[in-house]
Image 1 (cartoon, helix red, strand yellow):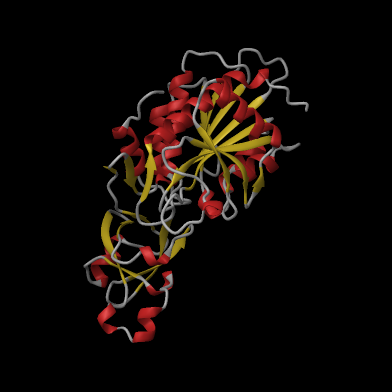
Image 2: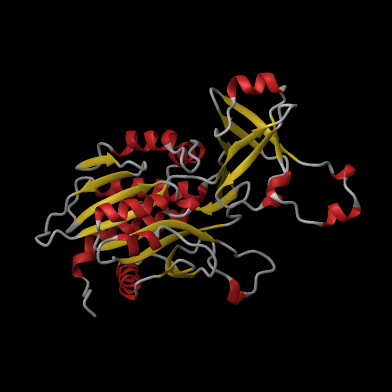
Length: 353
């Protein structure tokens, strides 16, 4: 892969799919992958699983790649007498970034609303100095209660309304966690079309990662992979006021080979294999140690029958879990290239050491 398809990534980014309500983005991904694999199916929890058969696989070895398709979002919890909506978060948000955020309530029809809170002019000095909690926000649809209730019910999902654009040399938009890796996995399948790989590949678009890796647990239990690579974003904190020892990753310096996150100590063999593959094929990369937060790596590693030799490749992302997120095209391109070469070379590594 040499160039990023901005329009396709934009469509993937802007298609809704809160945890548990991934159908819109799953349906779009089915339309994209169905002709790129030997077989595809969905499981009961909603994972989309594609299969590409290996050409030299007498031991029936399986490799699982996983990119989660859900995005952090909200759920309607209550509609008050004036039509304001109270909500529950689906996934982790930085509450200070919610003020005046535009959202879409996905009811009988989509309604655009605004995240509201107590106006600063009405706050006491003490209130102005405290960090607001998500429970203090509400959604204003600009409609009275009786109009809201024609279209909105308790339990409806809510996503952010945000356009993906180019900012300088970077991409900026909503839900790049993890839609930028969903896009990358799609590009991997495109690159492998017509090529041979040694082992069976299960390229999996998982659900409900943001609320506890739930889709990855189910998929890994069913697939029972020998090897696994999660594909997700990581903290790109190459920004002011971050000490060098606290930097996790930097934008534009290549994809990140994960060593550790709060949910997984990556298998040392997978880390070494990915490093050697990147060096062999001259693919720019950086290492990743993430001390807070986890990914589908944990589900892949621990939910197969005997455990999987698992690791992860990440894309650095600034402003993670905030209103808009930022990534660099170079890091996406290097991720795709490293994944493709790894899948082609995985039988050549000595996994016994």
